[in-house]
Image 1 (spheres, helix red, strand yellow):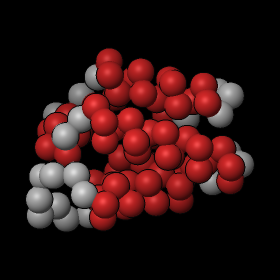
Image 2 (tube, helix red, strand yellow):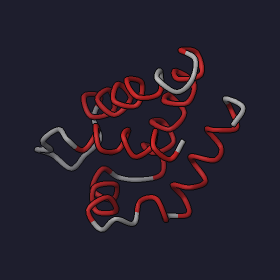
Image 3 (cartoon, helix red, strand yellow):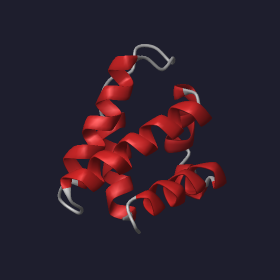
Length: 95
């Protein structure tokens, strides 16, 4: 599942960022990136559940600027709030 998260974040951050505010376009890209990876590891329904959960929770807990800064500093996976999001969303799909 850690590979899934890594690919999710890498795909999301591969798009150029012109603004540091969340908007529908960035959230859709983040969710779509997650889905493209998740469907290789879990069922389609589980992928939608997990990716929707993580996208929503990341949006609620962090600014886009914070996510980018954590990723660049390589601290995103050790961030306690991020880990809690992953743990809770994994529980929703039975992991």
